[in-house]
Length: 505
Image 1 (cartoon, helix red, strand yellow):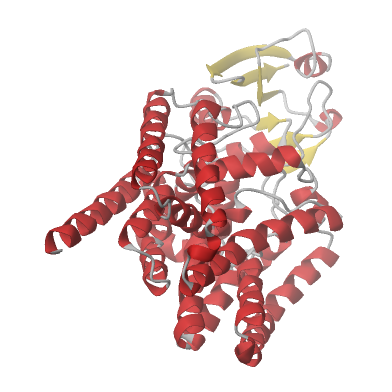
Image 2: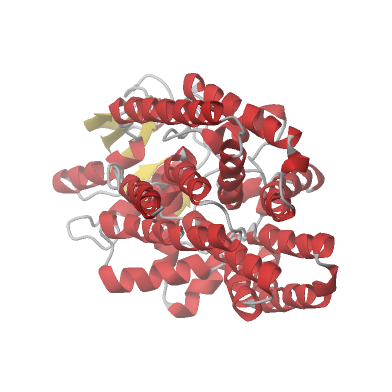
């Protein structure tokens, strides 16, 4: 018996170590991208203007930016230190995950398998390394679920649960789905506690009113929600299937629409094995103890209610709110449910075979992902291009897209040797701008002009595309105004190139 406990503990330590190590994998392999830049930009604001700046963005509460500002104050803005911020919360999530398993009285091997799923899921790895609020959302949602489980089982930790839920909804609006799940669970299974759970909901709601007022005021000032999420498609069968695959996909994450949705030769077999295990578990439902059935019901509510709510609201509201990153709150209860189904397979040989196959496919997924060439993105080229331009000529830099303008501004802000202003030329022929990316509201450091308003005799133009083409728009439109191309530099990246050219009269 003692030897068995040692083996179980060693297995947990090994899986937890893998979990932590994976979060540091390629942590600084890529530069900050648009949304991460907004995070740092927001956190750089003085305390007096941080909240108003974030409220103009409408779609995210301020807690993440407040904590990031404190983090930057401690360690600065190096890429490693910034990326360490979300990793910190992702790693910290192990504690409430483990505590939740103990509170639900899950067997050790079920817990270890659940941690394994939690460790290798590609979406969780991706968001553990992104300087956004999603790892904080996941961490706080797990603390909330753990404290709720304590309240549900023992009637304890009510006050800490209320405090964590306030922090949760101030991290992301999808935190409300976790709070709602807790209310529904009490109303369904422990009606005797309905007054206290509704009091919890009322306290969290009351605490959120000041931020709600700030967002409403920002929207009346001209902020348009359609800019933020108007591009998001309403979920259909394809989106739901893609999300389900992301729950079991080891290591891989679809970084862009040009990438495959999933590595199907890995995700589909894993999903099939887990699906069979779930069917067997449901078939043997009556053979489970009452406590086991209660645990599964709770996990089902935490996993299903946010997904169903997001799906329904995406069709009922003017704009879709569906997104894997928002639904990160369901990955932990889903991992626990899958682990329970697999470890409850009654035939030992079949149980061992199922878990072994999943581990082998996961290992194969690691081999494929580790051997895959790290994609090179155009936004990572703008800093070197900006400094190259400054070294040759200190003329202003013009561009045609908010996406490029924001990266250029961020690359050159507050840096010696980069005196240029970044200016966007609006409505240029030959440019199809991605409206999902726009300059932050309340941000005036990038001016916007029409082509006819340019009067300098010399300026740079930075843009992305396949190649430098003087015979077609947008460059031909500038040449038609009497300019000629005096210098150029191109950095070749995946699927497109980052280019900067010097125009003179």
